[in-house]
Image (cartoon, rainbow, N blue to C red; front, top):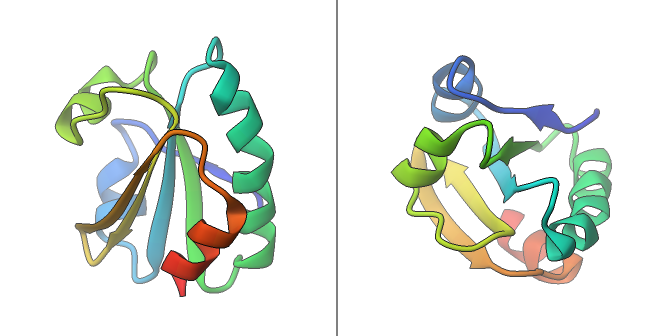
Length: 103
């Protein structure tokens, strides 16, 4: 499964109504640490495809969503379950830490 792209149009359906945990990577194309985080997020999407929905939100394209979740610095990764934020990680986050929190 590839990484989803979440935006204002599909956010409620894809994220808030998801029956799986959702990992969201808030990023921007110009952000160096985001470019380092991206391959980790891609790996998680492949490894956890049946258990977790993985997606990215470009903060420049969806500033409303970034504001809604109080994103002050990127990358920020959020785990949402049943429409509620369960965990939040600010800055480059290791695959191990993310895996541990997605189980």
